[in-house]
Image (cartoon, rainbow, N blue to C red; front, side, top):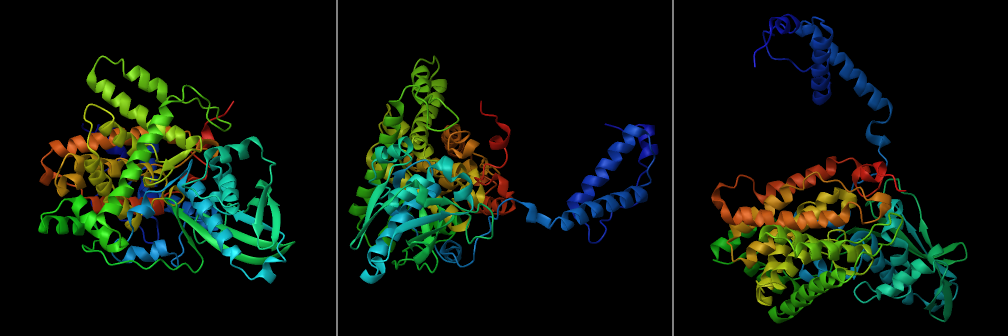
Length: 548
């Protein structure tokens, strides 16, 4: 394209590149500079380069002053900064120390950080209370839980109050009967007896308080649990649900563990161990699991079998529901069974394959929306991705044997651990890229490991899957993990398969982006993302979709 003579008059050639004035935000200056130029074209005004730059600087400075006068970014609704005292922050400094049974958890949906985490927290608090001196317990009149930050903002839609109350009355995530939680929906005024020492008192959902959603909290998912004597606090503990069902509390000290046989904090280091010792990614992970957890290979395999079978079960159960209405005000109809049924009739195998994988992911994710038991891989909101892939690999003509699925689950853990270690798994901290993005990367690693691919290919597949979720916001409509969350699991599963197929067919050494760079970008993007898009339901679809 060539410029017209009129353009030459409007934009005379500058003898030298535009110089950014000192103290002015570069992005704001360039945007204003471009806008002035566009306005000149439309109005026929002639601007000398120096005058144009000066006007851009003036407007950018005014914009910057206006922002600072309003308190800079203080106008954002919620803080997503993390306290440096949290172990999830401190542990990012050394090698990966997470183990499988900490990562893959069974518990009720719809959110690992808003349901499983709070239930684990209140169960922990109840256990602490049982150990208090008898004279202190004799004064007790009840228990109270206060929810802050994202737990307060979207806890209603996530069923946080039900999960928190269930923990107080002695229920644990892995064994709670979902019908118990369903009863709390049907009978919101129901009371539940709790015995502490010689005292028994009744608790209800009214004892779970939705407190301040905005404030300077150590973590976006902060909550306090209190043992009360009337209005007096007898005992209190502050907790944090830090993502993926992991929990911490004020003064938390991580449990003592063994040292990994192959210490790594990056994918580059993990690959070096694997390639130097002629090991697969799964081999490295198994050796570390044994060394860090102190468990035998047989015990770890038994746990992985349990997780794989639980994943398969969630898909089967989800497919058994036909067009029911999911809980909550959205009145969303389930569609996994319908998509599955119609996909089976597709003429072309490629269409059928995509339809079936999507149906499997929808099925597990709809189970999550019902508040039924799911597996964090890495979270409840993303609990449809990995199960869809495991189901597709095992419940089909492929019939992949369980020992290969175990290896795939270990490879998936490698990716999940690295994302937790160097970025985040919590949507309240990083948006949906930290949930669906990580789940898709884990699933891509699982597929490529099952296909006996070398570490470089596994890394490439995981990187591609994660890369193409970067920047994804978390904006659950009405605070429920339904729209857009359920379909995102289907897209995450299909993207995982796409990433695996590209990685296994490309020339591996030519892959230009490494996983460590993409995980760092996930972390950077999480820090830059507006808190309105981090599981607060204050923007995006949550703001624009009108429920009738």
